[in-house]
Image 1: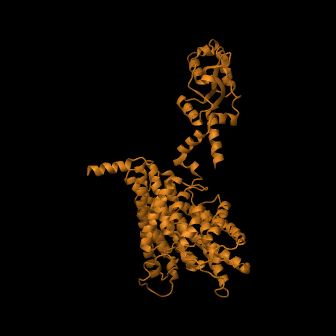
Image 2 (image 1 turned 90 degrees about the horizontal axis):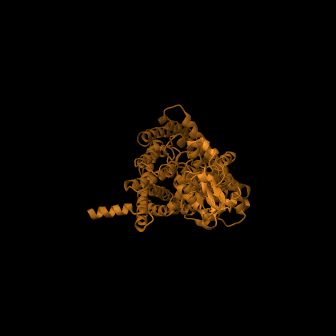
Image 3 (image 1 turned 60 degrees about the vertical axis):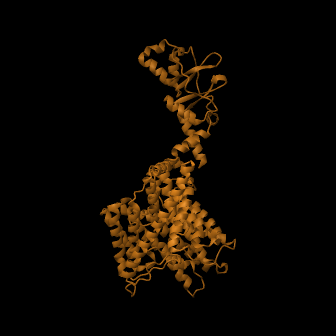
Length: 614
């Protein structure tokens, strides 16, 4: 028993960069992935049970689903008859109220959409997510979506998966850095499992943390391990197949790139509208002077009112997109106009219902609805192009699929992972070229807008990297480079040993220099004297400035650097000496002063390097 305990202590305490530490990261990543996969199974099961009871039994409404989504409770009997539209005036409000009460009672941080909370935990909370969050998030999300709320379960699964990763790291007492890594790995595993897209899920976890085209490289390998194991567990239960079924249309005419450019422009504008609408609703609900628990109920009521008139605007909406992927323009006369109106309605009204359901504080994701809204906008655009250019044979299904991934990629600032997502969630890699084209163009057109407010611009801005970034940048710049860039060699004053203190005091008063090289007649430096040294002498007897010379002071030899030193060395000397400036010396024995470098010079050099590196 003692031997096992000793081995466990060694396993837990091994440095992350050594063999046992690396093995620990890989093993724990796989464990986190499997647990996240089980969490995804639980979430989908709860969601489908909730939909069967509330939508199927009470409202007699069975929403369409994508071809690859499991149908766990469809065989169970429901009440039958026509759709009870009046039920949608009550069900989403009840779901919002009950889920809100559960969240506020047990885990207030599980409110709203989950991905933003996971990003915030990574950057600002040391990757810490309470263990109570995953089960509370799963139950609350199942209630919101199952009663007709317009939300997705992909956002919540990021919080659920990240919660499991954080819990594993906390139970083992791992350092904060490894807790962050396992938290992100759990996030990627959840997304990879639900979308049947393990590679995209892993890359999503590394990419979604930042707004710019940047990746959190240290989480990439653990996220791949976790995402594969999570996908394996989830697919073992629900089957190894793509989420969506697609026709065999693909990019085969270069001229189609022109239409895809227009699609990218439209999607970028749509993503701006979707983001603005969501946060506008979020801010309005936040300011409402009503009990907090009632806000999701009000959002559910507004969602139900829209759903009463337009059923595709409620629930997940994936079934509508599956139908659009199968769309052919010659189904029936007039089908194009009807399909266009349906998809345009989904884009506009599902944007509103998502803003009501999740923006009010309801538990659910905005990831899934963004996929649906983007697919609807892409499909509607494809139908419009098909009508305007009948000879071009525009593939509406392809426009729908590209619209799905490009819309979310530009809104969430994750273009690379969503490009990969195309092939994985459809099993069709023939749309990779237009997806790359549209994703990147739409991303560049909407760089200032993001669905996730907790995203930071890049790793340079991340608290977790701040110390390493500063040290790395300062170690890459030498004093010589700084002097040449700022032309500081001629911008300093030296004094002789026989200089009266009066003159030195006047020199300090006349300029900003705080440290002075003391040189002899040949220009060789005997030492340095600082403003602090002078202050110590004159504080004891102000009249000494009339009688003493610089030679009468105790000269210092610590605040001296060479051109070969890096700025990190300069900063270390400034801190240790509590100084504002150091003297740069050259020649044998560092005897010739050639410049002065201040703390502000180092800061400006750092900022310039960071600006150039972005």
